Length: 580
Image (cartoon, rainbow, N blue to C red; front, side):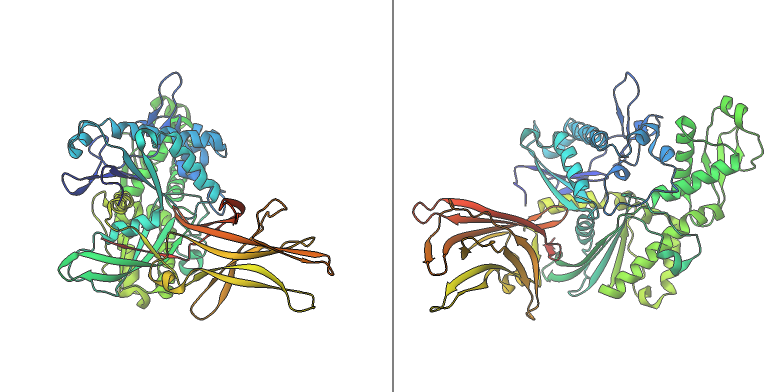
């Protein structure tokens, strides 16, 4: 676990921390006793910036900040009214990376400050001053490298390294799976069972959805941000049923969204019903808020009445008074059940398609659905009805849901649990790793003979049981004068002997690089030098798994190492394992 003298904090759509004196994970509640803080900033003229709920009601807000981050791959936002959804200022910031980073920094900085200055936190940790904090963040696994770097820069600029703080990153899918696994504490859990966790959350990028009612056809087009993680129960302590161990066997993350699409559809309905443009400013903000309230309040059967308090002066100038769904005196608008169903149907259809594909590929005995969409009564009714009629997934009923705000805080909860886990996260792989380097020699009077020789870095046994987080091996590298040097190759090999080249590493060996031996072949006008190479590697785990390699030539006289090559490559084929 993190240093026991540190306060462990998980920060996602909510903030949770480990209250050691109480022996539990606590949800921090900044205002109104609600643990969820909307990631919205507002920049009113000549006044301090606003954040969270206070910013949502301001015309100069910047909403859907995750929509502004670089996803992978980029997805078209055609069809969405970005000015209304993002806010006037947010729309002006769209695709301006410097400003976007500043917005995220501003928001995170205020979250950090409010938490660190909350006297209730000091009471929980029973300290006069906050200890150094181990901050744990999550990001969508589908973000591009640029998006991940942007977020990391924003986090560091927001002061999370201040006062001895540390920062750790994890994918949202991984954190959600860990959070759910800690809820599996009943005696019915058996070794070998597989649980599929579907995190149906916010927004990364946007793709236009298909038309409602087109089941499998539209499911090819209708995407939302979905993190699917399947993990297997690998152990249950017979004396402590709350102590379980797990291994992830599959993960899939998409770079799309749901909430902006639904809100955009409902916003367009308001505009058509009222005959009003509602393009920007307060009128657009109020309409978007009404659409959001209707989306969250729909139970799958009844009409939904929401607040829409447009100013009387605006209505007198632009409204013709012919909408029977709008009570302009009372400031109320009614969405019919059919309209709400039409906006949400493609989203649920997409989820069903993805679940079906995932279960067919990886199998599952149980399913848990978390994230904001899982709280929708309509969504739950549709999933229940559809599962019952599809043999491939009917055995997953009943679906595990969480009440209250738990679906929204489960990622933060998982981050904190990961930070306090007594055993470090382990990783397993079906691949061992090898370094292939050129070796040159002369056999008799023949020409020089060259071949690639392997050096094992990670054995198959190590990979299967627990991939070492770092290691070091030595090998001899041959370099021929006046010839183009051959690259160092990193390969991985499975139990069946199948090998794949992971990456090529060009080296920068020159005449000044120390060598251990030299063979001069005057008749061939060639000199071959032999170098003692120390290869060091480390497994870096943040949003993605990455293997970092460094190759250094050792001076035989002094033992000093001289770097000659460096390489990194993804290692997402490794599956994490953890224990509660």
